Amino acid sequence: MDRIIKNNYTSTAQLKELMTAPPMTAEQHTKLMRKRIAHRRMIEDVKESHLQNSADWEISD
Image 1 (cartoon, rainbow, N blue to C red):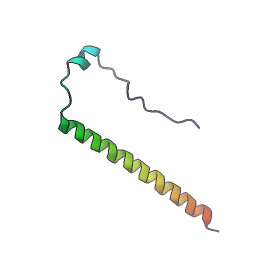
Image 2: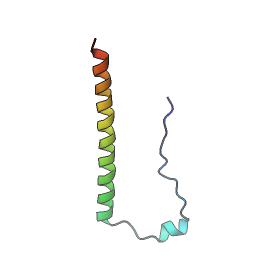
Image 3: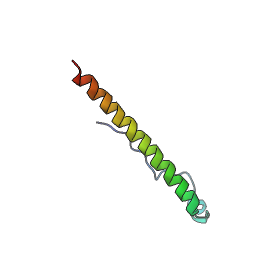
Image 4: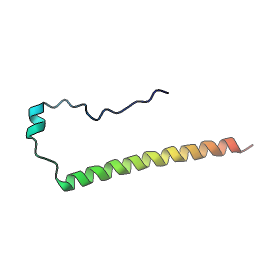
């Protein structure tokens, strides 16, 4: 089973750019995390729905 794994550590930015960039504010972090969580939940819901629909097709005769 081949799965595509997202590499979160790939960056084209230079180290100096990363080290001199201002840190993320709490509000920015909260917004980003909520967006990630919402996206993850949406994917989980779609997977669950797909599995449920697949199971419904297998059960019916």
